Length: 479
Image 1 (cartoon, rainbow, N blue to C red):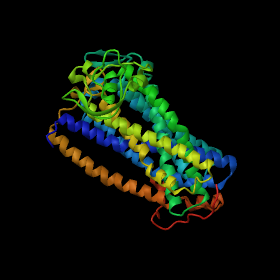
Image 2: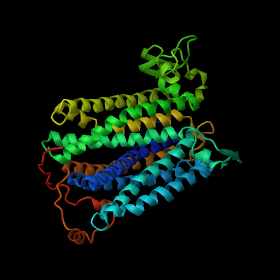
Image 3: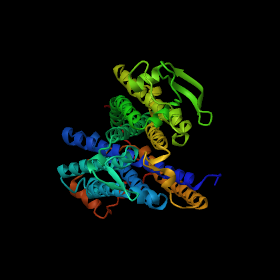
Image 4: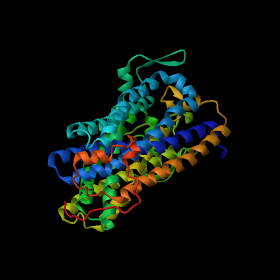
């Protein structure tokens, strides 16, 4: 297919499927915590706005959670089908870590998800709130185990190689490997930030359409406060993550920065834009700021770090790709900062809800968090090449013995299936968002319980069947 090898097609297939998958867990992590906050505020203040927002976003959470589970199953199978030599070599480490994720996080989520989605009027408020917290905790525990496994592949330690098989010798070192804390923090905050942007875009979209009520205003306001709080934090975490990467994966940093060689006595410039040419071993058409690259990464004015020419050609990541994927991520991050601080200024001017330019900006920034996550993962994973376990096992030695034809056919099937299945699911979820939060009249718990007595406890059952019908959006104004 297109002259690609089986190895290249296997990498594309894994990259394609994980690109679809990572979007759903990111929203799941953020929405679960958001729901916990909303329910906590409802129990504390008894303000029906928080209750109605909880019911609204719990429907979207249910659809997103279901798609995340389905897309995640494919990832586990691919380790055995497409990367069997990797599984045989490192399965003694990655296998238990993924099993711990199922035994802790997935069981925790599954155990309390039904109570969270269907138990609002069937269990006491304390137990329901506890269930929501447990589901939120489960999403964070899941991210912890997945990031521990992936981080070990980036900065492996705590093992020995016996008969060409990885043998764990220190599980504490395996789990808490050098890059794990930074990558866990970076991904978790990215999930919170992406969800805040998604929620904020939903609120801004409804405001622009004239659906101006207290519930829409509240979710827009909460989202923009979250963006303002976590966007600067993400910049700081990203800086610390970069320093850790420079220490343990210097070739990745050199590729990200399009840096080929040092000039004696001069600091490394920051290349804002350019085109890294892997064959010519240079970055063409570059626009740079003198000394700033070295200053950021070494905190010294004349600081230097290894260039790509200090690594053998076969050990260099593809700088052309990661140079631009990194800049997409950072560029979107700067726009997130601008959005957060713009909201703060408009609050001070008392025109937060009335400024249509700001509302349009918030709508356009809705998918930016997810795009930044994808760009960040491409930077991380492509930047690790040519290693699947950094410095230990090459990607070329990990792939299964499939033909290019086999990989081409399965890739085409994946593309068609994913766009059809998850396209429908995503469209339905966006329709739920477009319907907007409704004002729910207080009903006796017994009546509501009887009404829902026959409803099956599937996650998707929490979403309404009449999403296409006109909804009651309410008309109350205010904060």
